[in-house]
Length: 490
Image 1: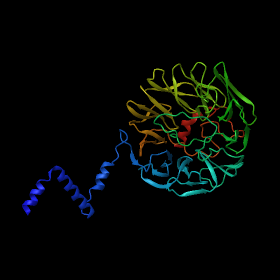
Image 2: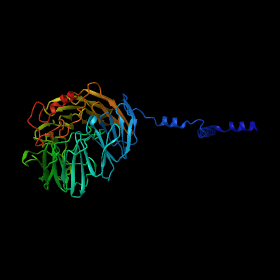
Image 3: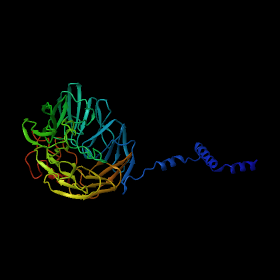
Image 4: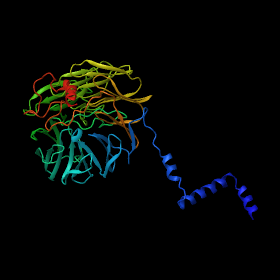
């Protein structure tokens, strides 16, 4: 009998032995003697480094991030059906909750996270470190988050809405304003308002810079009209009906009326900026295409291209130009063949005509700051803390000091840049996110801004008329004092 059994086992062959081994492992696992499967799965599912050199920490989140934002000493990760916060130091999860949308307001340690559900009124304001609800609202239909302000809109009827302004950690509204309804698109967090349309770049998230300071004026579209609200006082300073060939935008403390007229097979643009307090025209430019219309037509379906208080257009000679939204000055005109990749109130990143380098230029003076060889396809973005460059062949991700061009971080990685903060940036690929720390001497965090100010990024709403005062040593928008303010806060 034993001889027959041994002969039978010897005749199993390779497949038989594999089957016998699998059955044996299953029996041992089922009886609790030995279970190799968890370790085997951990080995298969093990995360590979998403960059070289390696990041400070790397974590796998529950779903592909929709947005990632620095909030003091934490990182807030918004996903499709939930939001979570992680420690900036270790990447460990601090808290998690179900939510359809999330947005960060405030700056530094005064940051808060607004979360809510789609098609459900109200929101919760959460401490990013503890996950504790600081304030709850049952009625708001829309929320706008800024570095120094949080706005919400609540409607008791279709034509009776109230806009409220809050300090990010405040418990009482700073002011309220009446709006005769809200647009049907005003739902959840940061619905579109009539301002400038930001540059976009491959592998760089649109919200990489985090919340901006509230501009002095905001344009709310309501039933085909534009209601211009002063963010310092809540006063509705203008209620304007755009003309048939017009598009309105609120940029740099001005109400910009853009007229596009078809004539002789071409589209002719006129830009007219008006003082919102008096309605008087303060500057006008013709022949600059702000890219509000589609190719081959004059119907204006998009906001003008720009950022905060500047707008970007194309002149009659095909060269790109950067205009100051407040006074209409030409801050920068590209040379033939150059392409503008990114812009903010301080700097512009320009691709050379031969596509071999990227240069930074200062808008206040027009002078070149630095140039870096970047051959091949590339994308770029500007944030308050770093200029981000991305290349594909080879795949690299680089963060530079926007003023000096000094390299803060250089990675060989195909990951995306998700968020940039004062000490580093978050990169991600799929469900994997990692923290990259900047080198020594990186730009510091300017800290939280007091309500009613914009921290030097543009004309502040703190004045009586919501426009900047006389030009001083810092420039009309304090663009020359950004680094001084950083040093003061450190």
